[in-house]
Amino acid sequence: MERPVLVVDDDVDICSMLTAILESELGISTVQAFSGEEALNKVRESKPSLVLLDMRMPGGIGGLETIKRLKADRTTRSIPVIGMSAAVPEAMGLLAGCDDFIPKPFDIGYFTRRVQQHLQTQRAN
Image 1: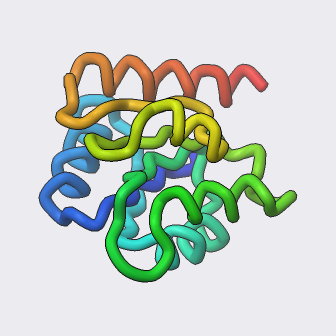
Image 2: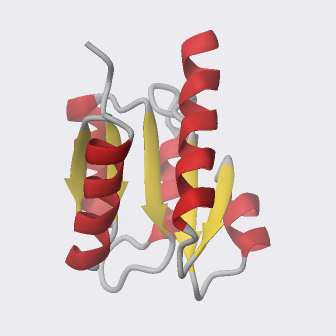
């Protein structure tokens, strides 16, 4: 069984939309998290093949801190992370450690292509 994609966003509607796209259009299993802290726990539990991470989450551990912690941990640093944001500049997400970046609002076609590309790269390795 393939490992799931972890979708992390404090906005429940965005999380639900991305999950629906991944599951119905791409046939990819997903796990959801709604905060940075929950994301770190879910990464350890589900060992996802890819993390889609909102870079701007209020309270607690935000997206930038989440990516820094994921990339600092030898057990999770190899998991690709796609940062997503309307407020955080792409360069900031990439400098923090994201492997890729998708701006909000989403272009669904671009979103699905980027996810598929990362998953194909994972399968090839």
